[in-house]
Image (cartoon, rainbow, N blue to C red; front, side, top):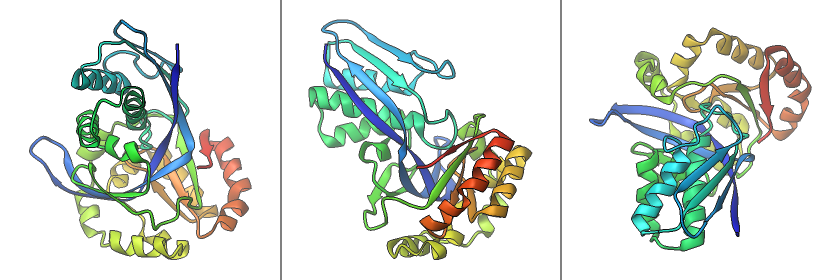
Amino acid sequence: MESFTLETPGKVNLFLRVCSRLPDGYHEIETLFHPLAGITDTVSLRFPEHGEIRMTCSTAALPSDESNLCWKAAGLYRERAGIASGVEITLVKRIPVAAGLGGGSSDAAAVLKLMQRRFNALAPEELDALAVKIGADVPFFLRCVPAVGRGVGERLEAVSEIPAHLPLLIAAPLFPVSAAWSYRHRNHAAAHADTRSLAELLAALRESDFARAVPLLRNDLEYAVLEKFPLLAILKRKLETVNNRVMVSGSGPTLFVFYESFEARERALKSVRALAEQYAFALMNP
């Protein structure tokens, strides 16, 4: 039986401004998504002629039933397209779970793309509509290019003129944080006082002026996460002693370090590796 496979990337939010809360409980945001091509999960699908959805996952930290976003994606596609065949999903996790890197959304998008590769049963706008039903970040991962996201993140505008590769390092503490918790406990006063703009950051990135981009990075969710988890705040301060700007990615707790140049990142690697051993976090090069 033929297998369909994708390596599916994580992401960082280089900019995340949280705006008003919507009636459905979600928040309107303005964000800049950037894919991490070097940090991936592997999603494989097989399609037996008959049967239901089945799933296996390389980690017990995730469910392998209908509560998994991959399962949900397969079910929605089958229902919308009228597909009768079974779906067998195999997920190999390397992106940390509930870490602010979008791994679950990326995996779900991979399922949609593989279903479409196999059946080609839906128009692009139908696939986008399914993605939104699964999660706010899923539409971004259908295309996996740097993009500005508005609304709840589903209204996307590609910004291909900024570099595909950035001088980043990823520091992932091995504990999860709920995105819902981060939004619920965000620090309104701190976010309101932040005047950094997405337009300024985009202008710097378009010129590959990383030194100018560093102080323009923004995440309205990081204040609450750093207050809730003192160890994370300590780690951020330690990284800042030997590095450039250190930010929480998305709803956390993963940190990313943004350097003024690729050469600066290489010079810092030895020190960051030492900190990774001391504070037991996963160091990843995207």
